[in-house]
Image (cartoon, rainbow, N blue to C red; front, side):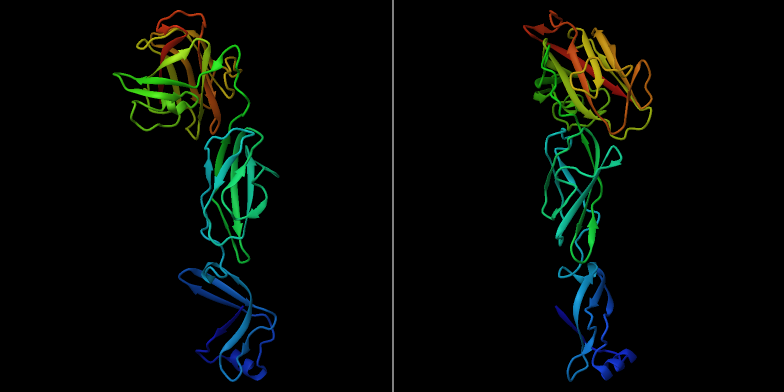
Length: 346
């Protein structure tokens, strides 16, 4: 690739070129434009006068900077966003990371796990083409921070970091009870029924105040009082949620209320699915009857023997089951019963 520059103002350097016909050395010319800076460097022959004229000519070795345009500038934009799907993947299961960058030839990923740099993350910590998306698999549960650098011969741009909380992909217990997956939910007071709710996601249960509002992630709307219409006596709920960045000492509690009453309950908050024997103090309540009786209290970071300590940016399960699988009520029909659990926080 060559270029020519029209001489506008006489220069001493140009006079020297007129004597020799060439600068005979590599030359870098700095341009600026509305798109930014562009540095054009010639090859070792430098600049030369065109035969019989006053134009300067040279052969481009490199072009660097956003002002060089698509033909030779760096990729755009800088600080681009990484989109992760699903937002809460499981260990051992592939998730997708997508981005939008123009003008890149390659992209190189980097990652940390719980703050420690990783030398390898399958599908991510290598250099490949700039094609989006990538399929990534994390073998270990934890909090990952992903970054991506995309480049061409001229320059490189970097992504904004993306936090991905990977939950354990270990199978939930299937004995002595199985994990409940769906139920109709009535949001009281009144009859506001949401049908076929996925009970595996906390937001689907306590993230609503009615059948028509948008879901709110943990800790959800204050005072949410869902009545789970059909929970099997031989089932448990393991509702997944992430704590995010709630402030230290932010707290809340779950209550087994009297309206929409069901049988006595066991509840735990644990990093494990279906875990009704957590080792963290304050994270288990057993055989709690309905009638405005408290189940598990929680507090960010600073727990105690009575309040479950939750850590920021951590994946948890709210585990819930009827204490006695042979219960006959209240609120039971056949092998299923109802239960209403209120969530409050401050």
